[in-house]
Image (tube, helix red, strand yellow):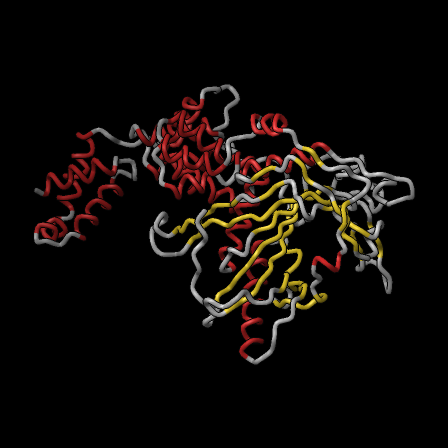
Length: 503
């Protein structure tokens, strides 16, 4: 597997970043108990005896959590261990009732794999401006989450909510392959897309379902790896980039001032835009890992892996490649359209029904996405269904409406203006809106020729300018012809007939 290329240096230093992502698995119950995992319940109402670590309780493995790990392993091309082991990670914290966290250490269930994505380099046209990157994964291991300490509502005290204690997590760890904050964000977005696509995580970063820790260090090119500092709990792509950029600048300034970087865990403060040290970073020895005596080794049979594989959806990278092959789309379009299963399905349905794949791609990425973004809505909430979009595209393709008129039809459909309960056929519905608004394009060559004759007669000076070699005059004449037709004339026919008449 090829290693990623280094990015541009920052003040003469190379940035080295590794990621650890805590992905909360979409199971109904916790990893070692039957307590619920629903978000937003009253504090301590979803913590059972096992989560509270009461004497005599024993953990029991959640099969669905293991299935989620298998799905992730298959999605990233990793090795899925036939036998993996759980360990106890010992440390004290008020929201950790047992005094240790059950996790996987020496033998994780998912080993290796990689995540491939495109990085926008800003160097011109869409496809040319995208550089393909690959980040190698070290592992993905199953573990339980801790509880949560509450400080805001308690004067001089802290509250402990153990609802989250025991929630199943899959921690996904990369090699230190990332070389910039932009690359880090692109990787995190691609991983977020993968885990939500395969249904193992809801991806809600505000609720903590997808939390990233960035291990950041800097070094002179060719030098050994520098001392890293871990930025914890980044739950926003925007803050992720800001935090890494600040940390890189801070480390370089420290080194240039003659100070050594001390390994530490830091937090990012969005209000100040700065990172601040939380504690000195622990090493593995500090946690005194040892195998959990209450949990037998986790055995994953090959037939179970095959069963999970058979039920997997088409992965976004594979779907994007298929869109390129099947529909002749540029790689940029195919990647953009596979941001979510809903967007991919919407595009494909419109492309197949209209027979206009590239036009469907342009409209989904352009007009439809623009409107959804303005209204902060998801593609699943789009008010114009794929059948309606396909019918509209077909009318653009056959010359019934121009692109500008089609946007007016979209306006009507978007607001429900063209939604007639008696009209079931999408094409009939589109035609009804076109007719009602008088948007049908004039494609009759005789009618267009008459308009052109009138425009040329009324603008003899422009005609003379064009014939004298001033090309701008041609565009002005086209504009006059379109204005005279109230925007209804077929633009291509106007161009062709006008050029013919001008000789």
